[in-house]
Amino acid sequence: MAVTLHDVAALAGVSIKTVSNVINDYPHIRPATRVKVEQAISELGYTPNLTARSLRSGRSGAIALAVPDLGLAYFAELAASVIAAAEASGLVVLVEQTGADPERERELLRSPRLKMTDGLLFSPLGLGQEDIGVLEVGYPLVLLGERMFDGPVDHVTMQNVAAARAATEHLIASGRRRIAVIGVHEGEVIGSAGLRLRGYREALDAHGIAFDDSLVGPSMAWHRESGARSMRELLARGAEFDAVFAMNDTLALGAMRVLLEAGRRVPDDVAVIGFDNIDEAQYTVPSLSTIDPGREWIAQAAVATLAQRIERGDEAGEPRTLLADFEVVVRESAPA
Image 1 (tube, helix red, strand yellow):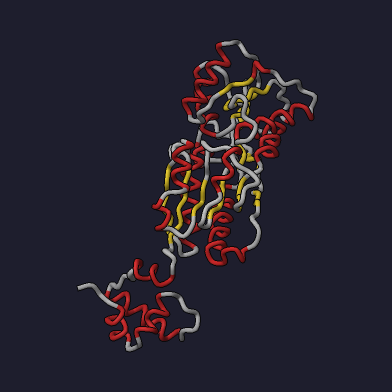
Image 2: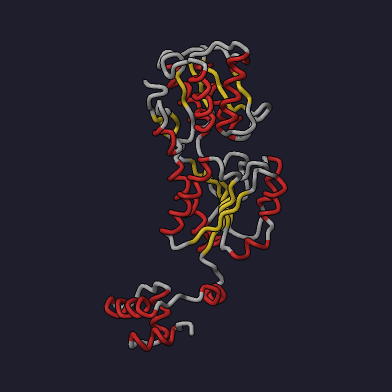
């Protein structure tokens, strides 16, 4: 037989209402009473009926997180950070992977599965600015990422342009002038690639360095293999460069492998800087210089913002855009 509230109350010598108040963390409980109830819960192995609690409160205590690709280290580490932040707020996280497919992203926003949750953290990659209307939903929603701006919901994101400019200026400050860039999405303006390319070009312009198409390595995917392929293409066409700005760390890792195979020393011959500060970056040989875009802060701010929307609804005020601070993390691949 399942242990009930009545069983816990009988063992603790209190009312069922008192047990319920302890379970729901009601603040005005005497410490001694709380200890007795918690000991009874532990002794009996009582597990609250979350379905019944959800029916009573109208909340599930769960939120959803939708990301494009957990195979990319940034999104995997972001998911881990969101889960940790949610746990600290007493929430559980259901993770969805959309594959950066616009139709799957639209389907997710109207999915009946979201009825099992109290709100959604949504990082689109297939949808774009022209799809901003799909964010008009009837539940708490916080937008992540750089594909959609100025929408009807809160948005927590990073400073892509300024951070990419800082990464490029770090290479320039170390004496590099022929700076290749890999990970470019041709024609993109809004989105991580478009914004980071803008920051790269701003840095070149500010230092009187002409933009050179021959130093651009397009790559729609941002995996290690993509970085390796872009680097092979740059080398095959005889591009002369003394530094590389990779638009994410996994691109940088693939590129460094190819540079090693080609006999190009990092950083002596070619300095390399990435973007994202994934955990692996500090353990590569050489260790990877990169941009820390504020992933931990983004996760914590996103969870806190969503929790506030769940708790206060429209009383939480107008939608806000929250920008994370960033940092240039200097390591061996691009020393100062």
